[in-house]
Every structure is written in C-alpha cells, then in structure tokens.
Image (cartoon, rainbow, N blue to C red):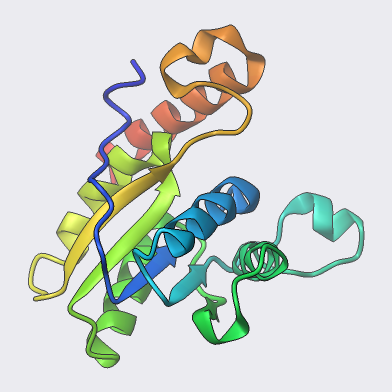
Length: 174
C-alpha cells in the first residue's frame, strides 16, 4: 500500500529546490540535508496555509514561513531562502511553481515533499508542466515519526497512509 504512494528520483544538482507546504519540520530538515550535500543553493518554501497549532498560539505564520524559519535556524543563510505565501493545495503549488520557474528562467529544479506525497505530486506536476520546458525531479523527505514502509507499526504511520490514500482518491476524481 505504501509503495504506490512513493515515487522519488535520485537527488541531482539543480538551480533551485522548492520545499512544498506541510510537514515543515520534516521537509525543512531534509531540505537542509540537500543544501549541505550541495544539490541546490536556493530553496523556495511554498504554502499559504497557517498550521492550526500556530493559529491557537496567535502566531500567523504560513507553512512556507515556518519551513524557512526552521531552515534558517539550522544554518541556511537568508540569501539561500525565499518564501512564496501562495497555494493551499498540491495543484495550486504546481501552478505557482511552474509560473515562478518560467518567470525566473529556471531550467532544472527539485521538488521536495514528504515521501507519501510524491506519487500524487508527480501526477499533478506532470500535468501542470506538460507544456513547459522546465525539467524537475522529486525527492521525498522521510518521516521522523514512522517508517513509510512499516507504516502499520505506529499510529502516525497509519494516519499518514490513510490521509494520503484519501487525498489520492479525491485527486482521481478531480
């Protein structure tokens, strides 16, 4: 069940890496590793949703801002970070990212999300970028709470697998 949800490429040197909204800590942590390994010098964090826990605390930071904040605190310089406070879904992110790449002359980029999100994401980005000359690869940040291929061993893994399957089914009908 998990294997169908995971569709990742090998990391490669790219002009920029887009860190998609959601799971800011895990995706930010993996983005820091991509920076340290020299795969990209520029990281653009996306996502305009405000995590509910931050709303409850009166902190109106978007997912993009939270991810950039974590990456900055992990040592990534401001000059390597950008924030796009747009998009509330994978489809919206694909459109925003394609437009950003085309308007900034980017030729090859990395798209970074959670492992379980990568297969659905690949389908959405393939459709959005079909008439674009921008080359992209997808990398998946591993969960810090469960093993994606032993998801049944933890409640977090079961919930994550269920959530991604429900989103995948919903996207099939859209």
